[in-house]
Image (cartoon, rainbow, N blue to C red; front, side, top):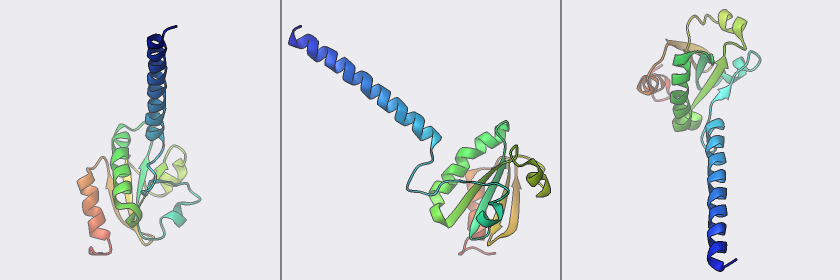
Length: 146
């Protein structure tokens, strides 16, 4: 084999390996929250009270089959990343906790329940914009009015 064929074959192998590695990284990015900034917290009936007890918390009641819930998810992920430790974003899948959701008066999906220091201060039903959530966060933040 001459050197040009060896170089060409090596380049093809390296290029293929690069594509494989990049595709695996991209798939991993879709599945895992970004590190370094706050991410959403998965809520259950057992950790709900503890996770909503302190600070400003947005709880998203959602279901996988709910189209508006799927559209709301990236908005809430952006909120979690942008606000970091200032605002906690929790997510509760109502299909896993039907009785809990009913007991807490969840009547539509998505519903976002806003807590400040463990007390419910607002409920938002349906798909809403990031700007609307920014306004709610400003309203209940330490610098905002209570």
